[in-house]
Amino acid sequence: MISIADLWATWSGPAGAIVGGVAGWAGTVLKARMQAQRNRLDAGQQALQLVDQSHRQQAYLAAAYERALANEMSARAREVMTADMLQDMHVEAIGARLRCHDLEMRFSLPQTQFPLMPAFPWRMVPESAPSAAPDMTGVEAASTAQPGAETPTDQTAPPTAAAAGS
Image (tube, rainbow, N blue to C red; front, top):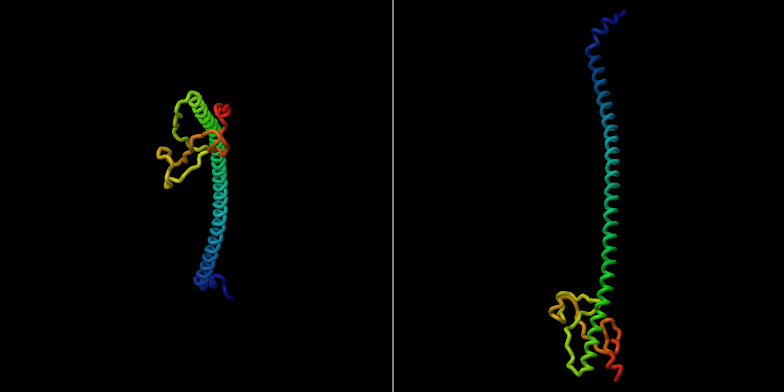
């Protein structure tokens, strides 16, 4: 009968090489699987970080948009208030012209020629278009309001006291 010691002495070299090769291959496969699992976990963690970063950026942009919208609404409200005040001043200036012309007509004085006032509300004219008045760049000029004439607001000017009395 064959003794185990003789069998071991005879086949230990080639069997050891085969067992070592299989064990090395199994270790490499196991290492590759563990690295793939680690990569999947790292990719998942990276995806979670990217999602978190995109949520923070989206919140920042939403807040910036709301601030810009609030600023624009505030600017528009100021613009409306300013336009209302300018319209009142425009009406007062036309009224002052009419009163001045009325007084001049009462005292038989020559009419004062006032400089042209810009139309209100303003109609912006492109820079390339010829301007009606060289000192009012980009704004159309309106004629002086005379009683019964069309005003820039497309309403007839009110008659003066002198015109109503005659």
